[in-house]
Length: 541
Ligand code: ADP
Image 1 (cartoon, rainbow, N blue to C red):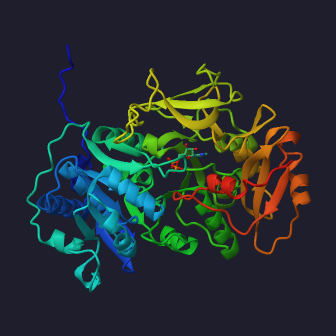
Image 2 (image 1 turned 90 degrees about the vertical axis):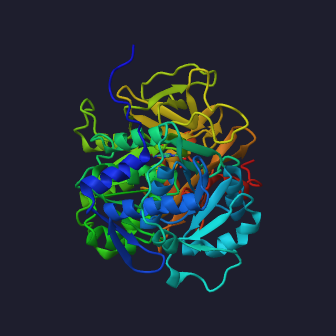
Image 3 (image 1 turned 45 degrees about the vertical axis):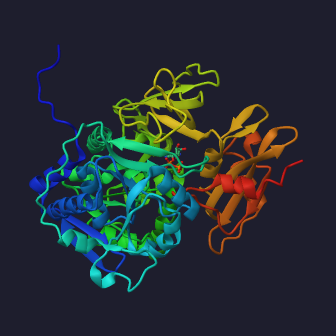
């Protein structure tokens, strides 16, 4: 027997239809590549996304075809998301910060048919085009006035002209909710990038989950500035949840500097923003130097890499802004866990509360978690035992796109995240390291994340990375790389003195080096693989 309720497939275009109907006048504000701020609303986004779908259909795009975007966060990119998915095709968000060869690999692997690009990326795409084997149309996301006089790409199309030539008399595709809607590749820090193909259903369930009070609490009153790019795990799904609820969106276009973000936060009355920690280090520095506040901002979501304790503390104590520390992966759409308060967590003491917020949050309904030892045995959820983090749920990857190796899951349907974590009795999970970054010293593990967090609390330190280097006796020992704050004078011995009471003695780094900069990955995280390669000749013998 089956239930007797309506079969209403969970389809992404329903979101934009609802947005136009229920809160059509709610604003979408975008900094643009062409310069200046653009203002429109959800009704405009729907109208233009329908026309885009119509234009793409005319270009020959069919259901399940991949349409790639190389674009910043902005209104045209938002239209493209809904238009492409509404057509039944797949929006493939390409990360422009990847190496050119990786972009070509990804576009060919995905067999992208059409590429929509922002003006910024025209030189890159002109260079790449001869290597892109499947792309038959290139669309420059701008108006006629900004089209180049000439380009090596024959038949380069103008986005605004494409849209203007359609009448909008077009019906969204009728689809199965398990049809694909979006495609995003991991950034390949662990080998070749792998494609994660989100379905309409997984996207909708994830969007609903993000709106929950104990998750991102996105609602009609929210004004959200997602600094996290739309090409990085779907801007953490925020645009979908915003369409669902009528939140106002503020997009930064190509601008990521702290003064611009600050201006937008103040001028647009932003209430919530989301980004990786490196960006917030720059913002906190800017606030300290300028003496400015953060207007109506009340929540900062930090994820993608561990949020240092001093960062959480500074936002909350100095600026009265709540930090939601979140964990996720491209493979998890990406919300996996989030550090919202828990009624049973008795954290009256501010230090204990901060300790809990340094964890990567608790699992949310829809994501099951477990930790296992090297033989796959279940480890206790006692907040101490650290093991391989495995997860499962309706918005977690099953099989990588066009994979030759089959399912990414074990026999029981669990996905091994490659992260090492503890889980406490209330379900709060703490990443101690990525499996490949953990430092194996004398049969024990040293958490590079924990060491970095501790040292970042030092007044003179602006950036930190810890990697393991080979050691003849201990297997591996930590090397600590530090960036000093401008004008600060501090020596390695001072840092060791500072760390000594804070970490186990055998965790203290064998060497501390001061550097001017640290390499970052295409998703804004410290690139430890590059560091290991850079320092590979060095050892502590
Ligand atoms: P990439 O592999 O390109 O970095 P992802 O953005 O999918 O792409 O990265 C996911 C990984 O980022 C996780 O497996 C985890 O190691 C790390 N990560 C994400 N959020 C956090 C966090 N809050 N704290 C620590 N690590 C995190």
